[in-house]
Length: 435
Ligand SMILES: Nc1ncnc2c1ncn2[C@@H]1O[C@H](COP(=O)(O)OP(=O)(O)OP(=O)(O)O)[C@@H](O)[C@H]1O
Ligand SMILES: [Mg+2]
Figure 1: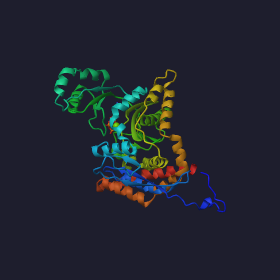
Figure 2: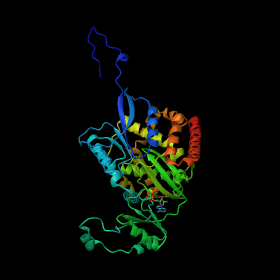
Figure 3: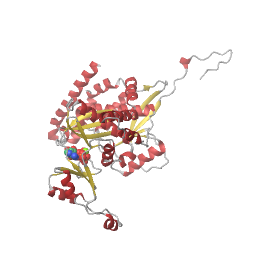
Figure 4: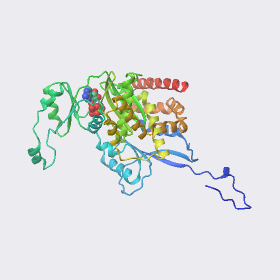
């Protein structure tokens, strides 16, 4: 804007222009039973401080735990961004989130539109369409009739009898039977023979089930993605919760490691998910995705331990980036962009993966995000390192251990998690020192 100077008057020096008041942003946390990661999130967000952007504005970001109450569909929403942990389980918060997305343009981690409608089954379908190695998977009709008065007629007329045993034989034993939209091991069985098959199908009742070929794997990799950040972890599903994530570096071949991280972000970007954990079975260079829809996954300090500071920092960094830069939420997915790559005959599988990843990283603003974090959140690494060594973190860990384990096991678990967190502190010091 040009300045008009009236003759005889002096233009006010620019330095004396009153500073604009800070722009305040509020992050909403829609929480369930957990206490540890929300407390950690609040404490790390407190370390961010005011952010001065290139336009001269100052931004302050705080958070608030949201409560469930009646709402008017036209009511404004005070929080610019919401991290949701409830919508998967309960209708009321889910419907509030949908209203916030459609009426108020609230930024959501994650959007219930895509998470509710795109469960495990849809993620398999998308990955098959993109040419990824999903194990052979068959969807079978319900064992018990669904609760609908018209079903008896429909079923008698159109439900074709089928031979479950023949399908299982074709897949080969052992195989897995699990709900098409599953999570938390609900209804999952490993089927070794025809007796198991019959029993599991009888018990499935009104759950809709997949039969899936078993993958013999060397490593179970779990990739946690938060925005454009991904951590690929060595997961041992047969271990008790506190030992499931092993701290191991480079446990996959470079090629498999690259694919594991890439597929995780590709599926997230494909469906517009931004806080999700992906599970895959890995043998050599081959990556077999088996579960790609775990919205707002478990990030408890008692399961992630070593990886907990990274996860909370990434959640803070991505939320702050989205809310301060005004990143727009999107409900449309434009999946054709991925399918156009899938249909190209001139590309190898590796080239397709690179092309999908380029689309995903563009959607997730990956380059801009890391550059922005380096410029505006550069102090956070040191601050989080100090916080993890502080009394506040020790209290958080102690409170969580006391809430999770019986009294006689608490010392043992404090030592266990304390040791793993110290390991992270050592590695992080080395990383920051080497920078
Ligand atoms: N195709 C498969 N081959 C080998 N193992 C499998 C296969 N599918 C599932 N499993 C095993 O069964 C477990 C549960 O499967 P899955 O992740 O699909 O179900 P879930 O209900 O999402 O469970 P969770 O919440 O533990 O992730 C896996 O962690 C894995 O150990
Ligand atoms: Mg799973």
